[in-house]
Image 1 (tube, rainbow, N blue to C red):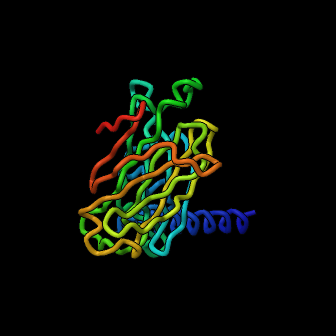
Image 2 (spheres, rainbow, N blue to C red):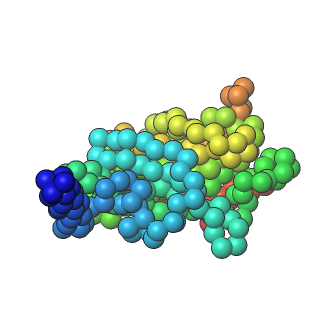
Length: 221
C-alpha cells in the first residue's frame, strides 16, 4: 500500500511539474497554446462569438470571426496569428461593422445593401509578405455570387474566396501578396460584385487604410 502511495505522489509531482514548465514556457515568450487563446490574450477573453473561417498561410493562420457589438450590430473581424516555437502569437488584425450589415436582413434590405470592404495592413511588416495586403468584407446582396478585386494601378484582377454563412451573409477575402505591383498601395483597388450570369451588380473603390460600404448604390465611409 505504501508503495502505491509513493508512486501516486511521484506521478502527481511529475504531472504538476510538467504543467508548470509548459505554462512558464508559453508565458516566457509571450505565446499562447492555441490560435484562439492568442487572439483572446490581446482582444479579451470571450471576444469571439462565432468563428466562420480559418485560412493557413506560409506565415501563420488567418482567423475570421463574428462578434456582436453592444448595439446589436455584427462586427466582422480578421486576426493574423503566427506560429512561434510550439505556441501561437497574435500579429495583426481588426474588425468592421456597418448599420446595413446584419444577420437578419429582409430580402429588400439585402438587395439594397452591397458589402463592406476593408484593407488590413500590419504596421512594420513588408507589404509583399503573405498574407498582406489583405482585402476582405461581407456580401449581403443575395444575387452576388462572385467577387473580383481589381488593382487600380495595373488593372490586374484577383478573384476573392467566398465563404457562405447564409444566402444574405457571405464572407469574402483575397490575399494580394506579391501580386501587388509597386505603387498599387497608393492607387487602391476596385471591389466588384457579379451575379451568376456574370453581370456586374455593384462596385466599391477601396483605398489603402480605408473601409467602405455601399448601400443603394452610394459609397460611404
